[in-house]
Length: 417
Image 1 (cartoon, rainbow, N blue to C red):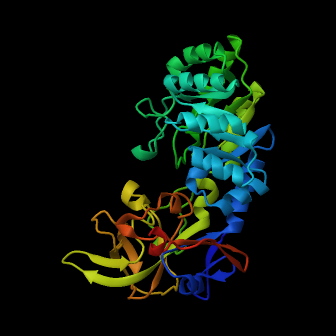
Image 2: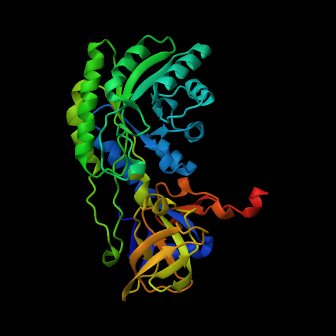
Image 3: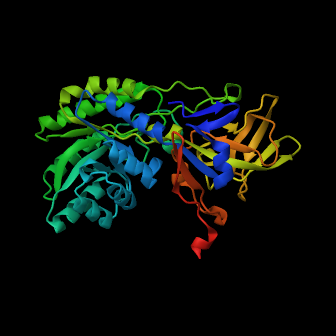
């Protein structure tokens, strides 16, 4: 769905002019397309329709309660990485038996909560965690559902901060030792083995990596079954990349082809279907990334000897991805102007040199008061936002056709006192 588009030179989200939202609700402001989220989820779910499957939305991408209620209402599960995310998932109506729980540092209390809740599986990431989970479950007189996360040592050649499938990463148990760990788990009184899990990274655009991971999972599950260990599901993780759209073509500086969910599913299903296991997929960014934009207003235009700075009211506390990962987000004006482009850095008000939304970007002439949209900010935008420099976090709004709803109020400094 082309949810962000220009009409009469004004940028719209679905059927609503974004400038009207900025003027009414203030900036910085997160604006989302509700129908994009629905379309992305349904396309992913349909892609796996030929096999028994569950789509577990990776909540760390954006855990707004309205997002979670929406996912629950259209049949989704949840991929959680903390007790807080599990609490929100259950409150939103996501069934416990559709929730998988990753994280390298689960606490005893988080384990107890998840066992009591009846989740589908713990994606256990180390032998010490396995021992603690077994101990916690035994003390409760229950069995914890286990899916050990194997690390297949696959390099997806992405940013090192979002790479998770290499042997040097902290995630999972090395595939060369995981077999012995499964044999140990089989003998534990507090453990019920239900699955195998792997997640190799994020923003993956080459499906060969998913195919390679699936082949390793197939061989691994086959070996487990030969040892008498039955596996009910194979969790392939998430990580499918998204398109960072060129809303205005002449501003575009990054163009990458993004596979459709159906292409990914076809590559994985052809390998894993003979196992006759449920397939679990954990998309996050690919569901909500393109659904959101951060709206910010220009405060000043500043020139140094070599650089033009567009100083805006949105900073790294609102959207840290450019500072943290050097991530690309296209930046466009809410009101389109056809004219000369000029290289500029878009920077925020935070007292850090690393506070920027873009560097050396071809942008139109803007003046104080003009609004800009930072595109593809639906994932890891608000969820990574902070109160650094004692700044209140933005409001969040979503649009459904011509309807507008505030789904998180803007924070106020007074709320902290």
